[in-house]
Image (cartoon, rainbow, N blue to C red; front, side, top):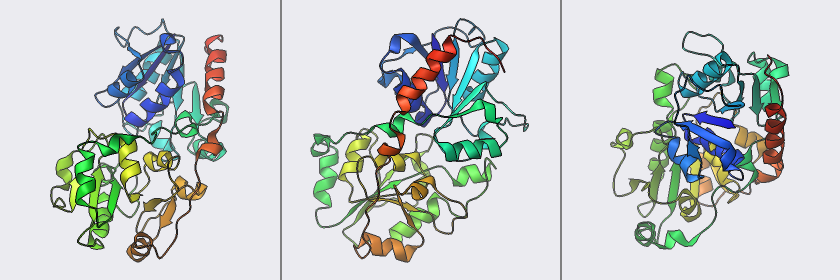
Length: 335
């Protein structure tokens, strides 16, 4: 039996994808944010106490930048002699994902990363090379969001009717400014407010912006932006419907941009003044927008966009990770 656990929605999708074909062999522990994801995949919640996990062969977690459930499960698993495996579903802030608030390392027995580049980043961040495996990412292997006809139904249909003569821009938000202030990671030279302000400044009167919030975000943070042109996307509308409906999808460095590349080839990454690299741009699945002038040219059709899909780069991920877990379940725990 394998216990899955994570606080955030992104890693929850990753872990659940591994379990979805054989859910009876898995249990999960989640947060307010991740529980709905696990349940969506039909997984059963662990009903015991966190200290009593010695009955599991493997504890498999996601990672997050601060302390919490993911790191707690690694610590408890190692204390109980259970094999611990953590997955890193992104390419950013590797060191922070394995460091607690006192700057102590919290490293599981094994760390699964997306690719060879992510492996090099993990080793550079201090993760012992013998612990790191580049096995892929099951979320990026297949389309997460399927095209469907749900967009023809309310409430999405009402918005589509109202923007018949303009463009619908879907802004994929992230919680950056608050995390900068909390020193969870280094300021990258821009934040969500700067990006949205730039987007709003180049709108035509008929255009609309929908803001898709990250699960950790509070809609009230954007109160100063909201108007008849700028709206918070209704959380009841399926993400796939939002991605398919929008004329343009604009984000910063969200994993959702990578996932969206499996649906369409015109995903935009706008990071004005950035001092870092976004993996989507590096892989060619998102277009790097350098400044507001370039953004305006793209939106008005003066620059053509033809990105790649990310699926081909991650073919076989699910099979490799499941094979690794099967192997580890038959092994004794060792550092």
